[in-house]
Length: 315
Image (cartoon, rainbow, N blue to C red; front, side, top):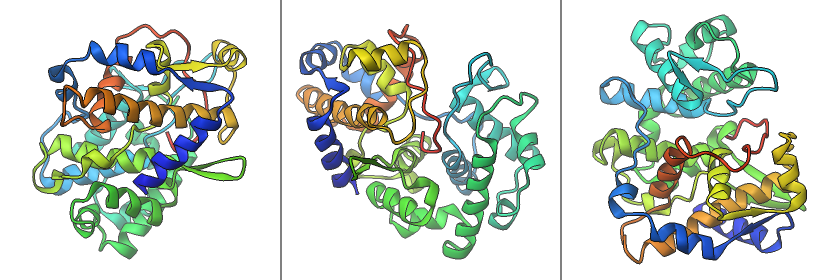
């Protein structure tokens, strides 16, 4: 599917009406990035050391429900123990495993109820899309039981630590990982969370054992709502006047709309072009490295525009 992601997103960028990728800005931005800064960026969010199977479970469960943290107007962003967004959700899952509020058992996950799930999330009740996250967990437990003998580590073993095949396996067997949009009737592939799984495993296990993915270079940028925001701030993504106005006014961009598909497709293609440019001085560079570097940078750089607001289970 990796070829489908690059090919279909390239087609969209070539036809785009709302988003352009600025090549000159890519060259300028990449000239200021050092190999040390880029290759040291890690997606490891863990607060504790875990046994192998526990860590795989935690990373798997997180990726099942890792999406849509931005609050509705007038509300504050959901948090857990002084963290917000994806970092908060990962921490909530870890603490729930530590306390026994989550049982790392596929049958238990397949029957988790809303009260149990909300207790995992803590006192802050502001996380959007609770029902959708709960449904993903129920499906995840059922699929693990029926296809992987009840454990996500068997899923990793089945694909023999192949990152591209892991993304395919997740997309084919878990409906909520099948992140595919449509643009004028044309299928556009992204697989954001399905790709992130192997990157997180690689970072946690330092590229060894269950985290040994030698084809991590096949992954694309993980198109979410934070990466387009930082790419726009850096001058790499350029929006039409109409789209920029919508983003400035925090108008919701509907899931599957041409604007949303173009934003995500341009994000993927910007990553491919950045990889080509950075490879001139960092031969081992991957889009996964670039993704984590940009995601971390977005947390410390004042943004030019608000991120696009799209309610979706895919990012």
